Length: 161
Image (cartoon, rainbow, N blue to C red; front, side, top):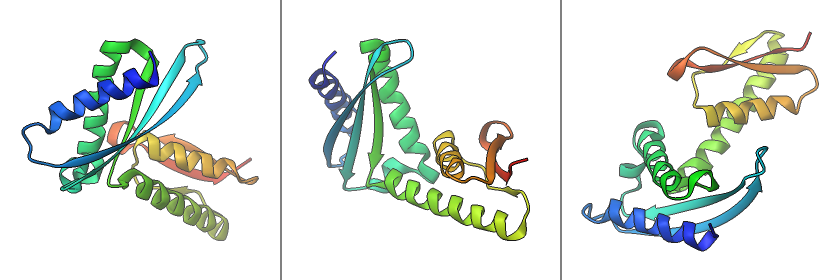
């Protein structure tokens, strides 16, 4: 499967989604190719949408955006197998959210060091938790773990033993 085939399929899916909504949109694609542990080449397609009503597609805490991305990925899996995957962003929501999560992580790192205590962050999505874990891994004296189940899963930042 080529990048062009993936883009064509995503364009078709988006046209069907927006057909009866009255929402106008512009789409921008960026491709990334990687080889997984199973030696399968995966095409990641970063899809950025600008619409006349971004909040409608983002939803509460990005829930609608996550659902739309999941739906697109299910359709792509049925069409192309493991080879195609979409990362969807609307109105730069994910880019802004990533920036905010990294700020939260930095603040928690500073707080843990200042108070010399373990810090528990609020519940986050797996994407957000991964960002925090990556930020904490850049430190020499701290470590992070995830605790909890489902929507209550959160990152715990503590000192290395």
